[in-house]
Every structure is written in structure tokens, then in C-alpha cells.
Image (cartoon, rainbow, N blue to C red):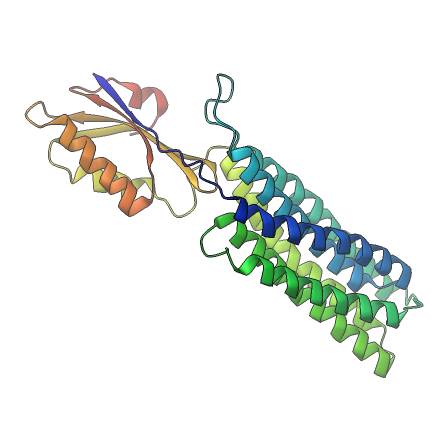
Length: 304
């Protein structure tokens, strides 16, 4: 019985990747408070809703920045996998927060409809702050665009800002319609639309985060496909105790026991298995235990 472990840790992070995130964080973080307080002052639910959406940008960019910094820290005797899992805890909390904020905005909009509440909307502040928010988002997108194709953290932050830009456009449209028609209920409609836009994305974020925290099989990977590919390798008799899980979004671990024929070269089987996992499933952190006969752990774990 022999255990072979392959570790592939990349700790190459450039200062150039951190600078655009810091600039975008300062811009969006500052404007989040401006938009939130202006929304409260103007009485615009749409603006408050857009501010909560911008909060996802702030948290998302902050997480991306922290992930880059923490990922530089080496694994130690207490954190043998390093500190990558931290980046999953923060979005989980963020998802819970945004989900309840979205529900509250929908409820508040419903109350305004049912009670025929007359709100003294201040269209000027609502319009100009939303316009400024749109400009901030466009500037942030420009800052993040230079490195988004080569870095997953930057790409995620870029997509967050881009979706918030759409919300800002919605608030601007609402302000223009209310100004020329006096239909104040449009504010609530836009607020609900933004909230409904946020909630599915929040739910998706929460599901992905929980799946990683529970060490579930990462999205896009099917164990049966891995099984069938490895079984094609000459000399492989049985595969059991197979586990695939993620430490973070892009760091996937793989372990399994392979029963092989003594007539075949173990190193050759190892090389072919690693090639399959790398090229077909993008898994590079691999631990394989080779056996000449089944050790029986498949019955213990219920995994064959």
C-alpha cells in the first residue's frame, strides 16, 4: 500500500492586482454611505435598494482584496490548508444580510401600495446621487477591467460593479418618470425590481458558499465522470473512497483509493490519473492511495 500526494500551491500575487481593487473599494465604499443616507433623506426606496446593491460591490471587492492578502500567508501547523477558506465565510454572511434587506424592501414597497402612503420624494437628490452612482460604477469598471481577464478576484469584483451600474440606471429612470408624471409609485416598482434582481444572485451566492463550507462536490464536477475516466486507465481494477471538495472557489482537492493490478506500473497509472484530473477536471491538488487489494474503506464511508 502506498500513498502519493501531489501539492500544487500558487502564491504568486502581484501588487498590480491589489491597486485597482483598493481604488474601486474606496470609490464604492464612500459612495455607498452617500447613496444610503441620500435615499433615507429623499424617501426613495429605489435609491436605498440601489445602495444595498452597492453594498454587495463593497463586500465583494473587500473580500477579493483580503483573499489576495491572506492567500500570501503560508500554511502552518494549525492551518495546514492555509487561510483560503476565510473568503467563503464573508460572502456567506453577506448573503444572509442582503437576503433579509431585499425582503424588507419588498415588504416596505408593498406597505406603501396597500396603505396608499404619500411619500414626499425629493427627486433632485434622488436623480443626481443615482447619476453620480452610475459614474462611480463606470469608473470602477474601468479600473478593474485591465486585470479582470487574468485574475478571478478582479473578474468577480468587475461583475459585481457592472450589475450595480444597471441598478443605478433604474433609479435614474424612476426619477425622470416621477419628475414628469408625478407617479411616485414608480419608485416602489423600481425598488422591487432591484430587490428581485439582488435576491436570486444572493441565493446563488449563499448556496455556493454553503456547498463549499460543507465540503460538497464543486459545481460542474460529477464524481461518476471522474470514476469512468480513471477506470479507462489500464491496470485500474477498482476505485473507492473518492472525495472531491473545495477549499475556496478555485482550489479543489481530490483524494481516492485505487486498486491496481501488480502487472502494471503504479507510477504510470499515477501519471495518467493526474493528467486526466488536470486537463479534464482542472484538479491539481491530488492525493491517491494505491492498493493491491481493496482495503474495505468503501464500506465504511459508503463511497465506491
